[in-house]
Image (cartoon, rainbow, N blue to C red; front, side, top):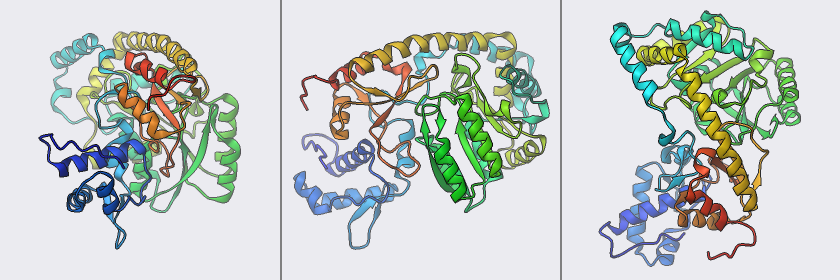
Length: 450
Protein backbone atom coordinates (compact mmCIF):
# COMPACT_ATOMS: atom_id res chain seq x y z
CA UNK A 1 0.00 0.00 0.00
CA UNK A 2 1.86 3.07 -1.30
CA UNK A 3 0.52 6.28 0.30
CA UNK A 4 2.85 8.90 -1.25
CA UNK A 5 3.23 11.12 1.82
CA UNK A 6 4.58 14.63 1.20
CA UNK A 7 6.38 15.80 4.33
CA UNK A 8 6.78 19.33 2.94
CA UNK A 9 3.04 19.78 2.50
CA UNK A 10 0.93 21.93 4.82
CA UNK A 11 -1.54 19.03 5.29
CA UNK A 12 -0.77 17.06 8.51
CA UNK A 13 0.75 13.64 7.95
CA UNK A 14 -2.13 11.83 9.67
CA UNK A 15 -4.63 13.49 7.33
CA UNK A 16 -2.46 12.55 4.33
CA UNK A 17 -2.54 8.94 5.54
CA UNK A 18 -6.34 9.09 5.85
CA UNK A 19 -6.64 10.53 2.33
CA UNK A 20 -4.13 8.05 0.92
CA UNK A 21 -5.83 5.01 2.43
CA UNK A 22 -9.26 6.22 1.30
CA UNK A 23 -7.95 6.70 -2.25
CA UNK A 24 -6.32 3.24 -2.18
CA UNK A 25 -9.60 1.57 -1.11
CA UNK A 26 -11.46 3.47 -3.85
CA UNK A 27 -8.89 2.82 -6.59
CA UNK A 28 -8.32 -0.87 -5.95
CA UNK A 29 -11.97 -1.73 -5.28
CA UNK A 30 -11.08 -4.09 -2.43
CA UNK A 31 -14.03 -6.16 -1.25
CA UNK A 32 -15.75 -5.50 2.10
CA UNK A 33 -14.25 -7.44 5.05
CA UNK A 34 -10.83 -7.52 3.34
CA UNK A 35 -8.11 -7.37 5.98
CA UNK A 36 -5.62 -4.54 5.49
CA UNK A 37 -1.86 -4.92 5.87
CA UNK A 38 -0.84 -4.54 9.49
CA UNK A 39 -0.15 -1.11 10.95
CA UNK A 40 3.51 -2.09 11.22
CA UNK A 41 3.66 -3.08 7.51
CA UNK A 42 1.97 0.13 6.36
CA UNK A 43 4.27 2.25 8.55
CA UNK A 44 7.42 0.44 7.42
CA UNK A 45 6.66 0.52 3.68
CA UNK A 46 5.86 4.25 3.79
CA UNK A 47 8.53 5.31 6.34
CA UNK A 48 5.90 6.42 8.85
CA UNK A 49 5.49 6.07 12.58
CA UNK A 50 3.09 3.37 13.74
CA UNK A 51 1.30 5.87 15.97
CA UNK A 52 0.41 8.07 12.95
CA UNK A 53 -0.89 5.08 10.99
CA UNK A 54 -2.93 3.88 13.97
CA UNK A 55 -4.49 7.31 14.45
CA UNK A 56 -5.38 7.49 10.74
CA UNK A 57 -7.01 4.04 10.90
CA UNK A 58 -9.03 5.06 13.95
CA UNK A 59 -10.28 8.13 12.06
CA UNK A 60 -11.34 5.90 9.16
CA UNK A 61 -13.16 3.63 11.64
CA UNK A 62 -15.04 6.69 12.92
CA UNK A 63 -15.99 7.52 9.31
CA UNK A 64 -17.28 3.97 8.75
CA UNK A 65 -14.74 3.18 6.02
CA UNK A 66 -12.69 0.76 8.15
CA UNK A 67 -13.72 -1.60 10.94
CA UNK A 68 -11.50 -2.89 13.76
CA UNK A 69 -10.80 -6.59 13.89
CA UNK A 70 -10.17 -7.96 17.38
CA UNK A 71 -6.51 -8.84 17.64
CA UNK A 72 -6.02 -8.64 13.85
CA UNK A 73 -5.75 -4.95 12.94
CA UNK A 74 -8.28 -3.37 10.57
CA UNK A 75 -10.48 -4.43 7.65
CA UNK A 76 -12.57 -2.67 5.01
CA UNK A 77 -16.04 -1.97 6.41
CA UNK A 78 -19.10 -3.64 4.91
CA UNK A 79 -20.60 -0.41 3.53
CA UNK A 80 -17.42 1.44 2.62
CA UNK A 81 -18.34 1.71 -1.09
CA UNK A 82 -21.66 3.40 -0.33
CA UNK A 83 -19.98 5.85 2.06
CA UNK A 84 -17.33 6.75 -0.48
CA UNK A 85 -20.01 7.33 -3.14
CA UNK A 86 -18.24 5.03 -5.56
CA UNK A 87 -21.23 4.43 -7.82
CA UNK A 88 -21.00 8.04 -8.95
CA UNK A 89 -17.30 8.02 -9.68
CA UNK A 90 -14.24 8.33 -7.50
CA UNK A 91 -13.85 11.27 -5.20
CA UNK A 92 -10.56 12.39 -6.76
CA UNK A 93 -10.34 15.09 -9.40
CA UNK A 94 -10.14 14.42 -13.12
CA UNK A 95 -12.40 13.33 -15.96
CA UNK A 96 -14.89 10.84 -14.49
CA UNK A 97 -14.96 8.36 -17.35
CA UNK A 98 -17.46 6.11 -15.56
CA UNK A 99 -19.90 8.90 -14.64
CA UNK A 100 -23.56 7.87 -14.52
CA UNK A 101 -25.15 10.85 -16.31
CA UNK A 102 -24.66 13.49 -18.96
CA UNK A 103 -22.01 16.21 -18.46
CA UNK A 104 -23.21 19.61 -17.33
CA UNK A 105 -21.98 21.07 -20.62
CA UNK A 106 -24.57 18.94 -22.45
CA UNK A 107 -27.50 20.29 -20.45
CA UNK A 108 -29.80 22.75 -22.25
CA UNK A 109 -31.20 25.50 -20.04
CA UNK A 110 -33.21 27.75 -22.39
CA UNK A 111 -36.37 25.65 -22.74
CA UNK A 112 -36.17 24.60 -19.10
CA UNK A 113 -35.84 28.21 -17.93
CA UNK A 114 -38.81 29.24 -20.07
CA UNK A 115 -40.97 26.42 -18.67
CA UNK A 116 -39.99 27.33 -15.09
CA UNK A 117 -40.98 30.97 -15.64
CA UNK A 118 -44.22 29.97 -17.33
CA UNK A 119 -45.27 27.67 -14.48
CA UNK A 120 -44.29 30.27 -11.88
CA UNK A 121 -46.53 32.83 -13.63
CA UNK A 122 -49.54 30.63 -14.36
CA UNK A 123 -49.68 27.84 -11.77
CA UNK A 124 -49.42 29.24 -8.25
CA UNK A 125 -50.79 26.04 -6.72
CA UNK A 126 -47.76 24.04 -7.85
CA UNK A 127 -45.46 26.62 -6.26
CA UNK A 128 -46.91 26.34 -2.76
CA UNK A 129 -49.04 23.22 -2.35
CA UNK A 130 -48.35 19.55 -1.79
CA UNK A 131 -48.74 17.28 -4.78
CA UNK A 132 -51.57 14.77 -4.91
CA UNK A 133 -50.76 11.16 -3.92
CA UNK A 134 -50.63 9.93 -7.53
CA UNK A 135 -48.88 13.05 -8.81
CA UNK A 136 -49.64 15.98 -11.13
CA UNK A 137 -52.61 14.95 -13.28
CA UNK A 138 -51.45 16.69 -16.48
CA UNK A 139 -48.06 14.97 -16.27
CA UNK A 140 -49.58 11.54 -15.68
CA UNK A 141 -51.74 12.04 -18.78
CA UNK A 142 -48.60 12.87 -20.78
CA UNK A 143 -46.83 9.77 -19.42
CA UNK A 144 -49.78 7.56 -20.43
CA UNK A 145 -49.54 8.89 -24.01
CA UNK A 146 -45.79 8.29 -24.08
CA UNK A 147 -46.19 4.72 -22.79
CA UNK A 148 -48.59 3.94 -25.61
CA UNK A 149 -45.86 4.88 -28.11
CA UNK A 150 -43.85 1.89 -26.82
CA UNK A 151 -46.92 -0.39 -26.73
CA UNK A 152 -47.47 -0.22 -22.96
CA UNK A 153 -51.18 0.18 -22.32
CA UNK A 154 -51.91 2.06 -19.09
CA UNK A 155 -54.60 4.29 -17.66
CA UNK A 156 -53.97 7.42 -15.59
CA UNK A 157 -54.79 5.55 -12.36
CA UNK A 158 -52.03 3.07 -13.23
CA UNK A 159 -49.29 5.73 -13.15
CA UNK A 160 -47.64 7.13 -10.02
CA UNK A 161 -45.10 9.95 -10.26
CA UNK A 162 -42.02 9.90 -8.03
CA UNK A 163 -38.96 11.95 -7.20
CA UNK A 164 -36.82 10.24 -9.83
CA UNK A 165 -36.46 6.51 -10.46
CA UNK A 166 -34.57 6.18 -7.16
CA UNK A 167 -37.73 6.91 -5.19
CA UNK A 168 -39.71 4.61 -7.48
CA UNK A 169 -37.33 1.73 -6.70
CA UNK A 170 -37.37 2.60 -3.00
CA UNK A 171 -41.18 2.52 -2.88
CA UNK A 172 -41.28 -0.81 -4.70
CA UNK A 173 -38.71 -2.37 -2.38
CA UNK A 174 -40.56 -1.08 0.72
CA UNK A 175 -43.90 -2.36 -0.58
CA UNK A 176 -43.01 -5.71 -2.16
CA UNK A 177 -39.97 -7.00 -0.28
CA UNK A 178 -39.77 -8.22 3.32
CA UNK A 179 -36.67 -8.95 5.37
CA UNK A 180 -35.30 -12.35 4.39
CA UNK A 181 -36.94 -12.41 0.94
CA UNK A 182 -34.80 -13.47 -2.01
CA UNK A 183 -34.62 -11.01 -4.92
CA UNK A 184 -32.95 -11.55 -8.30
CA UNK A 185 -30.63 -8.78 -9.54
CA UNK A 186 -28.35 -8.53 -12.54
CA UNK A 187 -24.58 -8.64 -12.25
CA UNK A 188 -22.97 -6.35 -13.11
CA UNK A 189 -25.72 -3.97 -12.14
CA UNK A 190 -26.94 -0.83 -10.38
CA UNK A 191 -25.23 -0.47 -6.99
CA UNK A 192 -27.82 1.81 -5.28
CA UNK A 193 -30.49 -0.84 -5.93
CA UNK A 194 -28.29 -3.41 -4.18
CA UNK A 195 -27.97 -1.11 -1.18
CA UNK A 196 -31.74 -0.48 -1.09
CA UNK A 197 -32.41 -4.22 -1.01
CA UNK A 198 -29.77 -4.84 1.66
CA UNK A 199 -31.26 -2.04 3.75
CA UNK A 200 -34.58 -3.89 3.56
CA UNK A 201 -32.88 -7.14 4.65
CA UNK A 202 -33.32 -8.96 1.32
CA UNK A 203 -31.06 -11.72 0.06
CA UNK A 204 -29.59 -10.87 -3.35
CA UNK A 205 -29.50 -13.60 -6.00
CA UNK A 206 -27.17 -12.74 -8.88
CA UNK A 207 -27.84 -13.57 -12.53
CA UNK A 208 -25.18 -12.72 -15.09
CA UNK A 209 -25.99 -10.07 -17.69
CA UNK A 210 -25.20 -11.03 -21.28
CA UNK A 211 -25.24 -8.75 -24.37
CA UNK A 212 -28.86 -9.87 -24.92
CA UNK A 213 -30.09 -9.52 -21.33
CA UNK A 214 -30.05 -11.72 -18.21
CA UNK A 215 -28.77 -15.25 -18.89
CA UNK A 216 -31.99 -17.35 -19.16
CA UNK A 217 -30.29 -20.67 -18.35
CA UNK A 218 -28.64 -19.26 -15.23
CA UNK A 219 -31.94 -17.67 -14.22
CA UNK A 220 -33.84 -20.93 -14.63
CA UNK A 221 -31.34 -22.76 -12.42
CA UNK A 222 -31.59 -20.00 -9.83
CA UNK A 223 -35.40 -20.06 -9.81
CA UNK A 224 -35.46 -23.83 -9.40
CA UNK A 225 -33.08 -23.67 -6.46
CA UNK A 226 -34.51 -20.61 -4.65
CA UNK A 227 -37.91 -18.96 -4.32
CA UNK A 228 -37.38 -15.27 -5.07
CA UNK A 229 -40.27 -12.82 -4.76
CA UNK A 230 -39.07 -10.39 -7.41
CA UNK A 231 -36.57 -9.74 -10.19
CA UNK A 232 -35.22 -6.33 -11.27
CA UNK A 233 -34.23 -6.00 -14.94
CA UNK A 234 -32.77 -3.13 -17.00
CA UNK A 235 -34.46 -3.52 -20.37
CA UNK A 236 -32.62 -0.98 -22.55
CA UNK A 237 -29.09 0.40 -22.26
CA UNK A 238 -28.38 -1.54 -19.11
CA UNK A 239 -26.28 0.15 -16.46
CA UNK A 240 -23.33 -0.49 -16.70
CA UNK A 241 -22.98 -2.67 -19.82
CA UNK A 242 -25.10 -0.63 -22.25
CA UNK A 243 -26.73 -3.82 -23.54
CA UNK A 244 -30.39 -4.19 -24.56
CA UNK A 245 -32.91 -6.94 -23.93
CA UNK A 246 -33.49 -9.03 -27.08
CA UNK A 247 -37.05 -10.19 -27.95
CA UNK A 248 -36.08 -13.86 -27.54
CA UNK A 249 -34.56 -13.36 -24.09
CA UNK A 250 -37.49 -11.15 -23.04
CA UNK A 251 -39.93 -13.96 -23.81
CA UNK A 252 -37.81 -16.49 -21.89
CA UNK A 253 -37.54 -14.19 -18.86
CA UNK A 254 -41.30 -13.67 -18.82
CA UNK A 255 -42.01 -17.40 -19.14
CA UNK A 256 -39.66 -18.30 -16.30
CA UNK A 257 -40.85 -15.58 -13.92
CA UNK A 258 -44.52 -16.37 -14.55
CA UNK A 259 -43.91 -20.09 -14.05
CA UNK A 260 -42.19 -19.46 -10.69
CA UNK A 261 -44.50 -16.63 -9.56
CA UNK A 262 -41.74 -13.99 -9.55
CA UNK A 263 -42.71 -10.32 -9.83
CA UNK A 264 -40.81 -8.62 -12.66
CA UNK A 265 -39.77 -4.97 -12.23
CA UNK A 266 -38.55 -3.38 -15.46
CA UNK A 267 -36.17 -0.44 -14.99
CA UNK A 268 -36.13 1.56 -18.24
CA UNK A 269 -34.66 4.89 -17.12
CA UNK A 270 -32.64 5.29 -20.35
CA UNK A 271 -35.68 4.77 -22.60
CA UNK A 272 -35.49 8.26 -24.12
CA UNK A 273 -31.89 7.65 -25.24
CA UNK A 274 -32.90 4.56 -27.21
CA UNK A 275 -32.77 4.66 -31.01
CA UNK A 276 -36.13 3.12 -31.90
CA UNK A 277 -38.76 1.42 -29.79
CA UNK A 278 -37.36 -2.04 -28.99
CA UNK A 279 -39.09 -4.66 -26.85
CA UNK A 280 -40.40 -3.88 -23.38
CA UNK A 281 -41.38 -6.55 -20.89
CA UNK A 282 -44.33 -4.42 -19.76
CA UNK A 283 -45.60 -4.32 -23.36
CA UNK A 284 -45.55 -8.12 -23.51
CA UNK A 285 -47.19 -8.74 -20.12
CA UNK A 286 -49.39 -6.32 -18.16
CA UNK A 287 -48.26 -7.89 -14.87
CA UNK A 288 -44.77 -6.38 -15.27
CA UNK A 289 -44.07 -3.25 -13.21
CA UNK A 290 -42.47 -0.51 -15.31
CA UNK A 291 -40.17 2.23 -13.95
CA UNK A 292 -39.16 5.31 -15.97
CA UNK A 293 -37.41 8.60 -15.38
CA UNK A 294 -36.75 12.02 -16.90
CA UNK A 295 -33.79 12.84 -14.65
CA UNK A 296 -31.17 11.24 -16.90
CA UNK A 297 -32.10 13.46 -19.83
CA UNK A 298 -33.70 16.65 -18.52
CA UNK A 299 -32.01 17.40 -15.20
CA UNK A 300 -30.53 15.45 -12.31
CA UNK A 301 -31.80 18.20 -9.99
CA UNK A 302 -35.36 18.51 -11.37
CA UNK A 303 -36.08 14.94 -10.36
CA UNK A 304 -39.15 13.28 -11.87
CA UNK A 305 -39.73 9.57 -12.35
CA UNK A 306 -42.75 7.28 -12.42
CA UNK A 307 -44.09 3.77 -11.89
CA UNK A 308 -46.66 2.07 -14.11
CA UNK A 309 -48.43 -0.94 -12.58
CA UNK A 310 -51.86 -2.33 -11.72
CA UNK A 311 -54.27 0.04 -9.91
CA UNK A 312 -54.14 -1.93 -6.64
CA UNK A 313 -50.37 -1.79 -6.40
CA UNK A 314 -50.31 1.88 -7.45
CA UNK A 315 -52.68 2.67 -4.57
CA UNK A 316 -50.36 0.87 -2.12
CA UNK A 317 -47.31 2.68 -3.48
CA UNK A 318 -49.09 6.03 -3.24
CA UNK A 319 -49.84 5.41 0.43
CA UNK A 320 -46.18 4.59 1.18
CA UNK A 321 -45.11 7.61 -0.85
CA UNK A 322 -47.30 9.98 1.19
CA UNK A 323 -46.18 8.44 4.49
CA UNK A 324 -42.48 8.61 3.65
CA UNK A 325 -42.22 11.91 1.74
CA UNK A 326 -45.62 13.73 1.64
CA UNK A 327 -45.50 13.34 -2.13
CA UNK A 328 -43.17 14.50 -4.89
CA UNK A 329 -42.60 18.07 -6.12
CA UNK A 330 -45.72 19.44 -7.79
CA UNK A 331 -43.68 22.32 -9.23
CA UNK A 332 -41.10 20.01 -10.86
CA UNK A 333 -43.89 17.90 -12.33
CA UNK A 334 -45.70 20.97 -13.70
CA UNK A 335 -42.48 22.16 -15.37
CA UNK A 336 -41.95 18.77 -17.01
CA UNK A 337 -45.59 18.61 -18.13
CA UNK A 338 -45.11 22.00 -19.82
CA UNK A 339 -41.98 20.80 -21.63
CA UNK A 340 -43.72 17.64 -22.81
CA UNK A 341 -46.82 19.49 -23.99
CA UNK A 342 -44.82 22.05 -25.99
CA UNK A 343 -42.65 19.42 -27.70
CA UNK A 344 -39.48 21.01 -26.28
CA UNK A 345 -38.55 17.85 -24.36
CA UNK A 346 -38.96 15.63 -27.44
CA UNK A 347 -36.68 17.87 -29.51
CA UNK A 348 -34.10 18.04 -26.72
CA UNK A 349 -33.74 14.25 -26.41
CA UNK A 350 -33.51 13.96 -30.19
CA UNK A 351 -30.47 16.25 -30.08
CA UNK A 352 -28.99 14.25 -27.20
CA UNK A 353 -29.42 10.98 -29.09
CA UNK A 354 -27.79 12.39 -32.21
CA UNK A 355 -24.82 13.70 -30.27
CA UNK A 356 -24.44 10.44 -28.35
CA UNK A 357 -24.63 8.44 -31.58
CA UNK A 358 -21.75 10.43 -33.07
CA UNK A 359 -19.62 10.19 -29.92
CA UNK A 360 -20.38 6.49 -29.49
CA UNK A 361 -19.01 5.65 -32.94
CA UNK A 362 -15.86 7.65 -32.20
CA UNK A 363 -15.46 6.08 -28.74
CA UNK A 364 -15.85 2.54 -30.05
CA UNK A 365 -13.23 3.25 -32.73
CA UNK A 366 -10.81 4.67 -30.14
CA UNK A 367 -11.27 1.59 -27.96
CA UNK A 368 -10.77 -0.74 -30.93
CA UNK A 369 -7.59 1.10 -31.96
CA UNK A 370 -6.26 0.70 -28.42
CA UNK A 371 -7.08 -3.01 -28.31
CA UNK A 372 -9.84 -2.80 -25.71
CA UNK A 373 -12.45 -5.57 -25.63
CA UNK A 374 -16.05 -4.29 -25.84
CA UNK A 375 -19.01 -6.09 -24.28
CA UNK A 376 -21.26 -6.06 -27.33
CA UNK A 377 -21.64 -2.86 -29.32
CA UNK A 378 -24.36 -0.70 -27.77
CA UNK A 379 -26.78 0.93 -30.19
CA UNK A 380 -27.83 3.74 -27.87
CA UNK A 381 -27.72 5.03 -24.33
CA UNK A 382 -24.79 6.33 -22.31
CA UNK A 383 -22.52 3.37 -21.59
CA UNK A 384 -19.90 1.14 -23.11
CA UNK A 385 -18.63 -1.80 -21.02
CA UNK A 386 -15.04 -2.48 -22.01
CA UNK A 387 -11.88 -4.21 -20.82
CA UNK A 388 -8.35 -2.90 -21.27
CA UNK A 389 -5.45 -4.98 -22.61
CA UNK A 390 -3.78 -4.19 -19.28
CA UNK A 391 -4.85 -6.91 -16.85
CA UNK A 392 -3.12 -5.22 -13.91
CA UNK A 393 -5.72 -2.99 -12.20
CA UNK A 394 -3.06 -0.97 -10.37
CA UNK A 395 -1.26 -0.12 -13.62
CA UNK A 396 -4.53 0.72 -15.37
CA UNK A 397 -5.49 3.20 -12.65
CA UNK A 398 -2.02 4.74 -12.74
CA UNK A 399 -2.36 5.24 -16.51
CA UNK A 400 -5.75 6.86 -15.88
CA UNK A 401 -4.38 9.13 -13.17
CA UNK A 402 -1.49 10.28 -15.34
CA UNK A 403 -3.97 11.10 -18.14
CA UNK A 404 -6.20 13.11 -15.80
CA UNK A 405 -8.90 10.42 -15.78
CA UNK A 406 -10.64 8.67 -12.89
CA UNK A 407 -12.23 5.23 -13.23
CA UNK A 408 -14.94 3.39 -11.35
CA UNK A 409 -13.55 1.03 -8.70
CA UNK A 410 -13.13 -2.62 -9.59
CA UNK A 411 -16.08 -3.88 -7.56
CA UNK A 412 -18.51 -0.98 -7.96
CA UNK A 413 -21.13 -2.85 -10.03
CA UNK A 414 -21.11 -6.28 -8.38
CA UNK A 415 -23.77 -7.21 -5.78
CA UNK A 416 -21.15 -9.22 -3.89
CA UNK A 417 -18.30 -6.75 -4.38
CA UNK A 418 -16.49 -9.09 -6.80
CA UNK A 419 -13.67 -7.27 -8.57
CA UNK A 420 -13.83 -6.96 -12.33
CA UNK A 421 -11.45 -5.96 -15.12
CA UNK A 422 -14.33 -4.34 -17.02
CA UNK A 423 -14.90 -0.59 -16.94
CA UNK A 424 -18.06 1.48 -17.40
CA UNK A 425 -17.26 4.14 -20.00
CA UNK A 426 -19.65 7.04 -20.43
CA UNK A 427 -19.93 7.88 -24.15
CA UNK A 428 -20.40 11.57 -23.38
CA UNK A 429 -16.97 11.70 -21.71
CA UNK A 430 -15.08 9.27 -23.95
CA UNK A 431 -14.18 11.79 -26.66
CA UNK A 432 -12.50 14.16 -24.23
CA UNK A 433 -8.75 14.49 -25.07
CA UNK A 434 -7.88 13.09 -21.64
CA UNK A 435 -9.91 9.95 -22.33
CA UNK A 436 -8.30 9.56 -25.77
CA UNK A 437 -4.84 9.91 -24.22
CA UNK A 438 -5.76 7.30 -21.60
CA UNK A 439 -6.96 4.79 -24.21
CA UNK A 440 -3.79 5.30 -26.27
CA UNK A 441 -1.55 4.86 -23.22
CA UNK A 442 -3.09 1.47 -22.47
CA UNK A 443 -3.17 0.25 -26.06
CA UNK A 444 -1.52 -2.87 -27.41
CA UNK A 445 2.08 -2.57 -28.63
CA UNK A 446 2.47 0.74 -26.84
CA UNK A 447 5.57 1.53 -24.82
CA UNK A 448 4.70 1.13 -21.17
CA UNK A 449 6.25 3.68 -18.81
CA UNK A 450 4.61 2.51 -15.61
